Image (cartoon, rainbow, N blue to C red; front, side):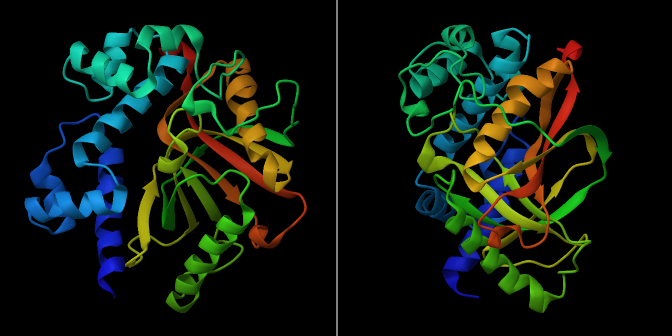
Length: 301
């Protein structure tokens, strides 16, 4: 394995750990140990692969998560700040205003998100998206279900991705190039997955993260650019759509803007992801995919 792939593997492990423990007290010593690096070298290598300092990365993810929760939960701003890992209200307030150019209360009032974007707001966070207000994609099927743990081997992309079918094809080809010799591809049991770690409309385009993956047996060995994570067991809503490559954003909009509220549901902390039929990345026309969101009852907030 070359040194670059080795570092990508280490940093992916660190980022996966941060995402799963964002509400906890994350210590530099623990992250450096996960990366098998000294604290001094860890800082430099983390920055070189993410273009952010560790502190900036943590604050941004916590602030972005709070922005999402402010739009979907009825908790107080202070409670949401603490639930996202901030230790005091003042730090949260400064970080939020620096990130979004407005206070948390203004954000909550104006609903500055492309998922909830019924009123357009001038912001760098809404450049490049065009959600059609009257466009409605009718789902083929909507079903609530309980999923067991799903173990995923993935290859990650950081940057804008919406509508870029060639990007998804190239990532998938890299993944399959590793997976077939490893003997972990066994269609139709193997599922193709795309995991969305951030929200378009909250995270800036150049920092958006997606993981293109396949389901694999537990404890599958990965290395280099190929990472592994677990989509945790729990209650999910599955919304199956037949869409063109440029319609996934509209499908997700329907899930969050219409389907969840109509059923009295809210997103929980789990991943949002899509499951695809085999060879979907080679299709130029419509393909069927299922959009999954970890859910809880809205009345619990």
